[in-house]
Length: 155
Ligand code: 4NP
Image (tube, rainbow, N blue to C red; front, side):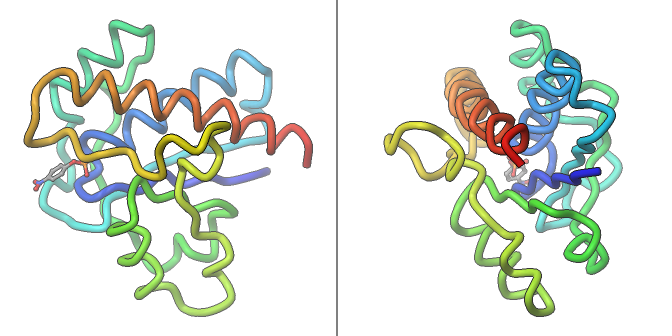
């Protein structure tokens, strides 16, 4: 089993979208039996909450259901139990790196490292902006998740 953890700040916008897109791709490719995906936030402001309604709606427009997800904060045990820990931006990658106990730092990457083009390194935080931030986040996440699926298939 390959285990993947998507990480953003609050676990109510970007990482739930990344989890939802990845789950759909895993079902489509039949990889859902061998790959598990979850998400978490580096901060705990929204623990136990559903994803942001704007994220739920933007996801639903593209056929992803993220409504059943609930926010949680990263736990120390995550660094051992996940093979890929993928941050949405540099700030959250730095937070993870500071907290990570040792050789597991190799598991920490940016989600956008898996996107084919060099256009973006981060999924920008859409929380304080308008609807188009969620569409942009989904465009970036879809491109990176497709690259991630190719890498996992090749393993
Ligand atoms: P996320 O977005 O990290 O993509 O879930 C945010 C959610 C909440 C906050 C900031 C970003 N906040 O400050 O509460």
